[in-house]
Image (cartoon, rainbow, N blue to C red; front, side, top):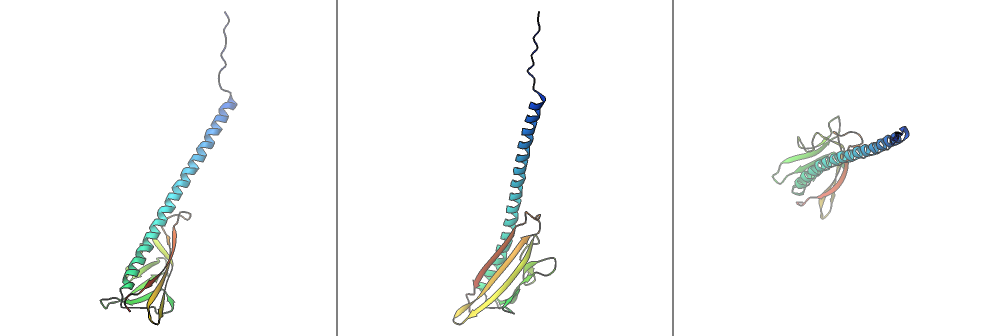
Length: 164
């Protein structure tokens, strides 16, 4: 009686090739997952900054459109004075000095502490037989995210005063 030996096992080279293929597939899939997560964080950061800046602009626009008068101390400045319909004199200001940079209405803060306003200006223009207008420029960046995931927004708008 003769015994037959069945040699159907895998060789060392075949096992190494399979391990290498699975390692490459694993690296590629984890890389794509990390890129997807990074993109989602950047998108969240951008939305947070845009919502803050849009909120600030909407408050500024609502107050200025219905104000009695608007004045800028200089031609292009970071302070804007206005008189509301109720006769109250108030200001909008860009606080860009120091570590905490934000937009303020009077003494109240319009942007959250998660956002840093890197640049902000108000430019008042008055023309004969036309209502005064204010050009508002704001640049802001997220302070909570890491460097590559930081969202930044730059917005400019012109507000025309209704009551003149």
